[in-house]
Amino acid sequence: MRFLSVQSVKTLLVSMVVTTLSAAPTNAGGLGKAEYGPEVARQYQAAVAKAVTFLEKSQQEEDGSWSSFAGVGPTALVTTALLRHGRASADPVVKKGLEYVLAHQQVDGGIYVEGSSHRNYETCVAVVCLAEANTNGRYDNTIKKADAFLKGIQWDEGEGKTRQDPEYGGAGYGSQKRPDLSNTSFFIDALRAAGNDEDDEALQRALLFVSRCQNLDSEFNDQPQAGKVNDGGFFYTVAAGGESKAGESADGGLRSYGSMTYAGLKSLIYAGVEKNDQRVKAAKTWIGKHYTLEDNPGMDAQGLYYYYHTFGKCLGALDAPTFVDENGKAHDWRAELIQELAQRQREDGSWTNETTRWLEGDPNLVTAYCLLALGYCHPDGPTSRLEGGGVPGTAVNVESGS
Image (cartoon, rainbow, N blue to C red; front, side, top):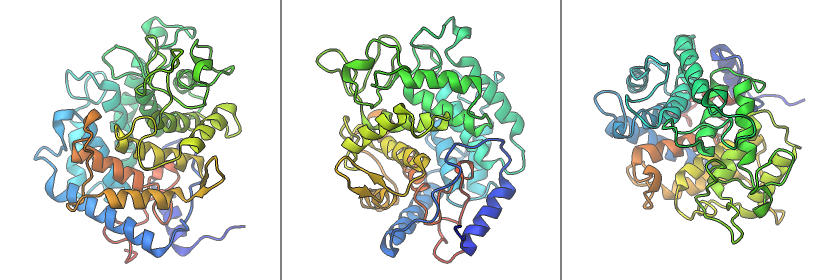
């Protein structure tokens, strides 16, 4: 029997009191207290404190947004990150962020800037944000409407698709071009945050799409490219003939790459796939062969900080303090992620990517990614109450225990 520390008991009680959703992502056991030493803990504390100060003191616009030129997404991600690092919903900065998000719920239930071609993405990250702040049910109705909107734009029978179509079950930006794994990963996050359990029909449809985006010749993937690369990794989309941002193999296979493989594996787990399932095992094998924090495997520096976010979320979902690579080396991935992000952080507390593709030149978005990634590395376990954790303390005062 494992005995909990006083702090862990406090965290557990807070989490029990505030949790109102009927279902949480499937790593609800939580990683528990980290084993890394005081120097890494100090790096964690310093990195989080500097990042929170950067976002709070210098970047929020008068209307409560961050980087509003990119829609609701950056504001929802930043606000979620602040909530997960100890800021309360009533905190003036967080409150303004939440108000900005809420102000963009449209009559169809979606939460996005009017005219946006990224309706799914914006709504998904907004749902996770509001669910994280929903300590007294105040956002229940808003989340319910957004949940219905998301299910309504999923690629299924409503779009004239059947289970035989490669697009079936996926989610896209909302511009009706084609669904992709990135959007579908966000979609699954939002469904779980909204209280859907793993048996939800929309979630299981999404699982079919996710499985088809894996380079794995199996009973779960009936697409022609399934066995061409067959390395267990994931690519961007199986729809519209298929696409990988990492390019194609000589025989036309779609190359696997890091950020999508971590997003795909996380999605499998959130959708209830057991850890002994061949899809999970194959994805873990790919990660074991390509484990690194130096770059986004297969993409170099492109999407690097998105990769760090999915890296933390995925390995947190696996609910294991170490990850063993193909050479048998056990990685304390939380300590390694903290150290990598600490050395990449700028003096002003932000992060940014010199390779600016996918908006990673924007310090608000990238700093939100990093704070969310660090939320899976807290010394007392995950900071998200939606993912089996709580809020162990404020970002600035973790060391003092306040």
